[in-house]
Length: 443
Image 1: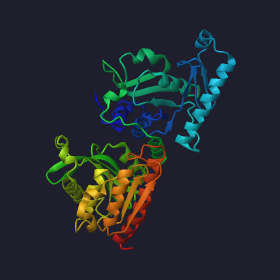
Image 2: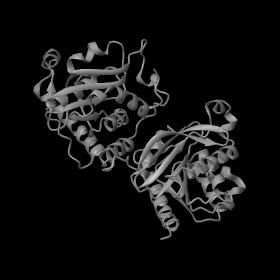
Image 3: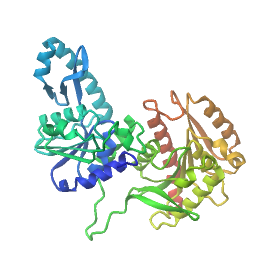
Image 4: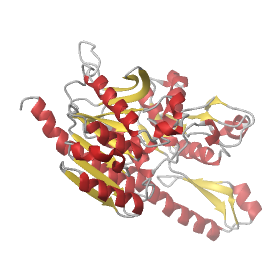
C-alpha cells in the first residue's frame, strides 16, 4: 500500500477508526511527521487534537539504549532493570532527565505556545504517528499517555513492520495499522511524498484543529464551508485539485506549484492553511497530468501552464459558491512565471499575485501587461533568484513589492522562514482581496 502523503494516510487511517467516533476521544500526534496524519484522524472523529511530546532517557554512555522516558506534567517512566544492569547512578539519571526535560519544554512551547495540554484523564487516547520504524517513540508516547490518566490507549499508524505487534502490543490496548509490508526498510518508502514536516506545519495543524467546526443549521442543511478533493477542468484535460472554502470567505487563491511539485506540496499546503485561517479560500491543483509530467519539457512550458491556470480560473468562477469571490494567484518557483503569464491576460481580472521563491522572469514580455498588485517574496540567501526577481520587478508596471526573507534559501527550509513568507503573503492577499470583495458586493 502506498500513500500520496501524510494527509492521504491520515484520511485512510481515520476510516479504520470510525468505531471510536462518538466516544470520549483525544487524538495525539507525535511531532513532527505524525501531526498531519493525526489532524485528519481528529477531524474525521470530531475529536480534539494535541501533540504528545516525549523524550527518551538514554543511558549516558550508550544513548541509543533507553532507560526510560519523560513527558509533560512531570511524567517520568523509568526501566529499573536497564538502570541496574547499566549501573547508572541516581545522579547520572537526574542529569540525563534534566537535559531532556529542558529540550521537551522547548519543543512543547514551540508547538503549542501558551495553550495548556488537553486533559487525558478518563479519555480514550489515540496516539498517531506517520509510521513505525523501531517503535521506541511510539512506545514512550503510549506509556506517557497512560501515566497522564488515559482510560484506554489506541496506537494507530498507516504502516509498520510485520513484527510491530510483538514489539508494542503490551503498551497499548488496541493497535491499528493499515499495512505491514514485508520487506520493510523505512517508513518513507511507502509514501509518494515524504517531505520533512516543518515546525510551522505542526503549529498550523494544531491551530486549525482548535478552530470551531461549522455545524449544520436547524434545518439540517450542511455548513457552507468545503474542504475536499476536486476534479478541475483545464480545456479538455481533467486535473486533480484540493479546494478549501472557509465560511464567509473574502476571496479565493489559486496555487501554481513549481517544477517537480504538485497539489500535495507540503510548503504550499502550509501557506494555504495560513490563508484559510484568515478567511481566504484556496485551490491547489496539478498543472499537468501524470502522462504530461513524464515529458520534462512540459514542466517549463510557461505558456502551457499559464493557459491551464486561466482555464482552471474559469472553472472556479463557474462554481456557484465561488463565483462571487475575487481571485488571486500564488506561484512558487516556475509556477510564479505561469501565474504572471495568466494574470497578464486582457480579461484576467486578478485581484492580487504572490510569488514565493519564484521565477517571475519566465513570464517574459508579459510582465509589462500584468495589472494585478504583485508581491515577490525571495530568500535572502537565494542570490541568483533574488537578482532575477529584481530584474522582473523592473519590468512590472503594476503595483509591486519585493520582500526579502533574511536567512532563507530557495525552498524556505530554515526555521521560521516559511512562516514569515506565508504571513507576508497572507497580508498582501487580505489587503487587496478584501477591497476587491467589497467592490464586488457593491459596498
